[in-house]
Image 1 (cartoon, one colour):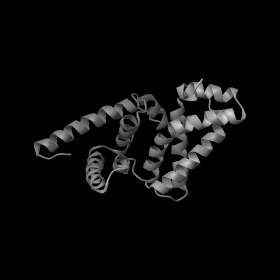
Image 2: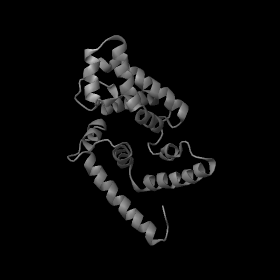
Image 3: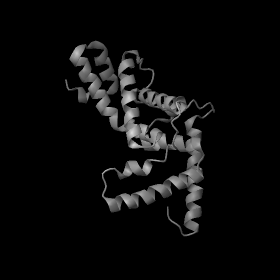
Image 4: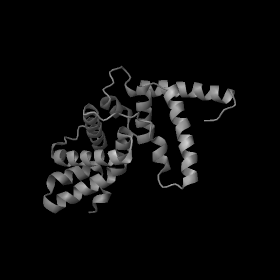
Amino acid sequence: MRLGDLSDQELLAEYAKRSGSLRDAVVNELFERHYARVARWCLRFAGDRDAAADLAQDVFLKAHRHLGSFKGASRFSTWLYTIVRNESLNRIKGGQPPTDSEDVLGQMAALGAGPEELAARGRQGQRLRDFLSTTLDRVERTVFTLHYGDDMPLDAITRLLKLDNASGAKAYIVSARRKLVRATRRLRARGEEL
């Protein structure tokens, strides 16, 4: 049995059954599988790569310490994101300034590109961030980014952000789409591109 072939849920079941180095192998597989996503989340919260790396390390340490208490009531990725959010909020309370969740979308897309491509992507990313910022409110941007940028299910976003409206995150997605369509039409009518 290859650990890489197992689902997160199956890996968590293996973790509960194993001990020692076998248990460590399960943890390593889980964390390797989710590292890129956690790194993106941390970068969105922290705003720069060094702070994001520190935050990601704290997240994985906390996840490792508390993995045995994970009950499986939500998806493993949702549980990890909750740790990211809580650790980020703890840092904000500790005096580190928050960043807007979309501030680093362009940086993420630009990883590994050459200087000219980085500059072009940077300008395009900034236009996109400005467009989202002026078109959507903060909750809509957050829901939109989590759903479309991180493939997080709407029910998980509703729980994660503790949205108490009747439709949860879906209402924010519908509202965001309408606003983005109207704003895009206005841009095109003026002959502008995003």
